[in-house]
Length: 150
Figure 1 (cartoon, rainbow, N blue to C red):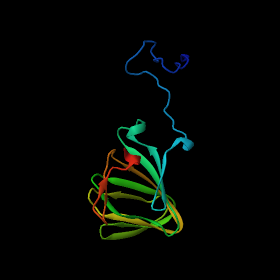
Figure 2: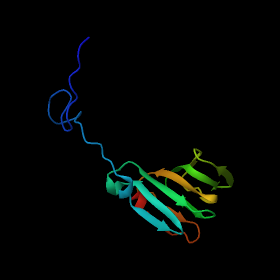
Figure 3: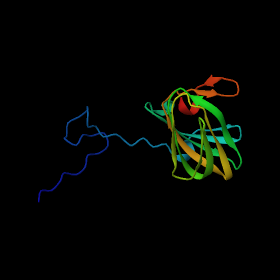
Figure 4: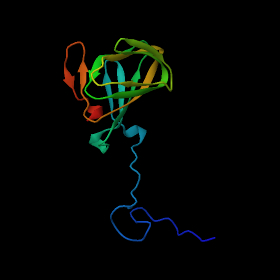
């Protein structure tokens, strides 16, 4: 049986050449205490990955909603995909309502009105969407690109 060469050191290629495709990079890790957080309407939004910090293809964030709280009715100009990670909530998407538990996931099409209402223990959801996605509020029609997707 042939022996394998030792693994390359970070910054070296496995084939011994320098530079180009195949270059090993240190894994970019952002520690939990480094994630920016935002308080909005009693909810805590924690940005896990965003274009401003190197994630140019997707934004990822967690919304922690207190017991009896909710995310208000809104729309987006791109898809919104989320999964419940803790607690329960009622998800309203268009004319549909579903009770969600940890592990359940929802795909919200662009332009679809949606919101969630947390259960008695609160809820946490992890959301991914296209960077720069607009949040369009139903109450006043204002549109912003939140910092957690910028």
